Image (cartoon, rainbow, N blue to C red):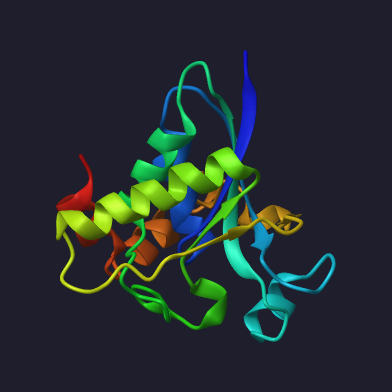
Length: 172
């Protein structure tokens, strides 16, 4: 097994877990915070939009089964890359779309994929998702973990705010 990690921000982390969790080769998908300057932030702090953090998911995967490139491709299918001000009904800095890279290889894969996506003209607007070096990832509170399993009705409500329709249109 070749264990690696990927970190993506794409709006509400509750809705970012399931699309990755369902894939073969995924070891874990953890909701948390990344990209900010406050150590060990709480959900309440991140919601104030003063920490610099974005709601994110940290995916641990077996690279012998699923590649980082495949994860990036899934990311483009579940997070709107044309909306820098949030995702779907979730607005604000803590919901901005970011691909965090851990090394030069991940950076290259993400940048190439972003360029290919822009050239495909699948989306009407420019691709504004940031690609940036990962800062420390802080795991969110327990009640945020596996939210789609723990609270299926609330999860469905969150997805109905635009993400479900987006995924129907863009998921392969």
